[in-house]
Length: 326
Image 1 (tube, one colour):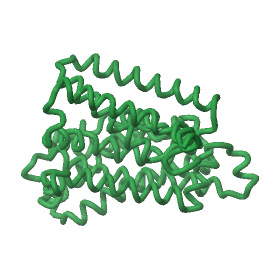
Image 2 (cartoon, helix red, strand yellow):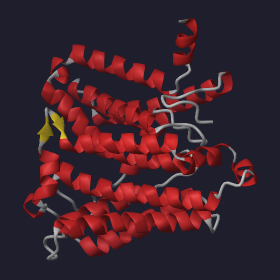
Image 3 (cartoon, one colour):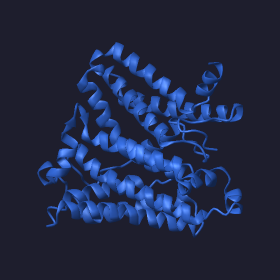
């Protein structure tokens, strides 16, 4: 029994999960409507977009990289998905092009980072502005309104399965799939090795450049899907869609135990981090606390998560929900 408790205490995601439970209980006491079906649905809907981007970010952060371009990419793909009908194309065309845009941006990022050896922070910041510029040129002042959103996309954001939003079910399934791949597939496991020790990974024969390139491509593909979900969630899109959302996704990852220094973390932790951020936002909003303080609390939580990560790294060899990732 003692060994099981010790093992549980070493799970990286456990402290943040317990904190999530505590925040939810406090919120429920202060605002009983939080634990109603409508209240829980609001949380699930609110967390969905950040959660799917956090899943995408996990793929690159475990390699000690980062992708800032997802903010402009998700907005662009949401607009393209919504404009497909106006341009005389089917919903399948819009989906294919949205995924294609995400993959193309990921491929550009991956090539420059993996083969040109450029810093991912600089590269993805550049592509964020590049995509944003192209997005603004194409969209201009146009706004995708509800009557232009494809019916199939609108159904994803408006319907529920036994009270659970369709959009969250999609994100949850994506989390399970990506989590399984990162646990079971050798190529995905290599991402942790690259983030832990790049030189050792090269000496071990891991095709580092190829792994980094494909991870960025996968991140781009998931971001393209996120654009479709963004349109489904809000039923609108314009040139400002997705602005700044990349920072929330990164924060969700770090708060959920995905080490910014690379080599450690899971998509499950990233999901917990995203839910915690959304729960805090909902809680503070329900208590009538101004938005400034909501942002301040999130920032403080991010600093605390990084500090806790450093402390745990220096004290014990951590495990995760799916086992060790060092």
